[in-house]
Every structure is written in C-alpha cells, then in structure tokens.
Image 1 (cartoon, chains in turn blue, red):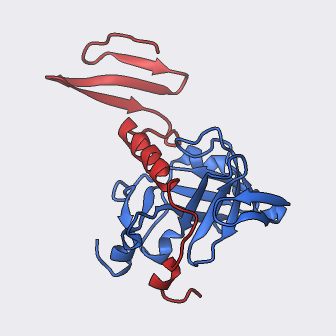
Image 2: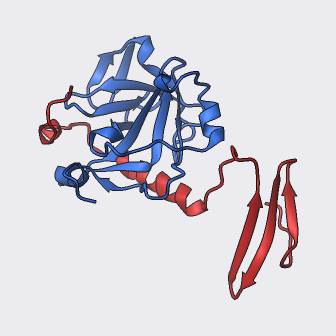
Image 3: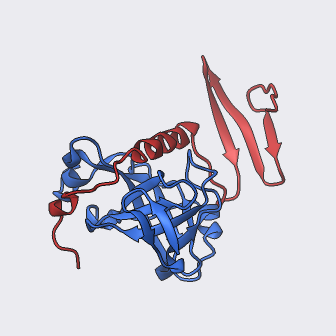
Length: 145
Length: 76
C-alpha cells in the first residue's frame, strides 16, 4: 500500500510492515498505527505514523551500542505483547538526533518492544533504573558511560 | 480525582489487588508502601513525564539522516 512518510515522502510499503500500538506511544497515545521501515542509513530504522505523516521516529536496536542492554519490563506490559517465544520480540530505542548529529541519543528507559508475529507494539518502561531517556549513542558505543 | 486523607499507617485499597499505605510522614515527604501483584507496573510519575518529553524531542528529528550511518561499523 502507498503511504506518506516523513523521511521518504510518498512510498509503497508491505502490509507486513504495519504495526499496531494499542496504547500508542507516551505523549502520542492517539496514534496507534505505524509502519516499521528501513532507513537509508543503517543501523537506523523509521517508525512512521500512518495517521500523521509528519510523525515519525528514528529507531535503533539498543544492542548496537550497548551489547550489555537487558530488556526488563513490567509483567503487564510483557503480557500485553501476547508473545509465545522470546524470539518473537524486537526491541528498539527511540533516537533523538540534535543539530550536531554526533550528539545523538537513544531512550533506553522507554524501549519499544514489538511482537513481530502479531505485529503488536508497546512502549514500555525499564525496571532497571540504570537505563535513562538519553544515552549518548556514539559515546557509549566506544565504551564510555 | 478521588482525594482521601490518610494518617500514618492507614491505607487505601484500589481494585481487588492493590493496597497503598502511608508508611511514614517526615516533614513534607510521605513514604508510601504499595502492595500489588508483581505484574502491575508502578513508577514515579516523573518517569512517564521524562519519556513523554523525550518522545516529543525525538519527533522533531528531521527526515534526513544523511551520513548518520557512517558512524557505525558495517552491520552484519
């Protein structure tokens, strides 16, 4: 199907890229349908709102820069994902890319967790307080903390 | 919003499975005890506020990620 996207304008996506977020994202609760898309700059992805073309989030897998990241989320959020096996889940962090892109940060405190079989997603909250909303991606990739 | 006044050691029951108790009152700080099933999520409101705020910042990211991939080693 054809959609309007923030990064690419009008593009064609496959139905299998469409995800349902029953509770939306925090601050964007009314937007529940998104498309998960590759970006032209791996390892980043885009989460594109299908309701408002201007709303799109850059995502990165936490393990790219924090291989020590462990997903630890509340039971009721895990239940909401209705997953049968751990492998069904994908974890992403939403990135903020400021004026100076080298200072890009990722939110590891509020990860996006997606059940790729059911195409269901949530934004959860990490139970481990060491994960914050702003982690310097490049700094931490180099082992800085 | 339902507002109830409680003294130290008094408690409130929410639904069938959640109890909130006033454990201690020290100056302007109230220490609350929450008894709830493990699966129920309980967070300080500031955490929600911080995530919401960061989501809104993140939504400002421009549509072009030009050159951003160069900072990363080739992905498997």
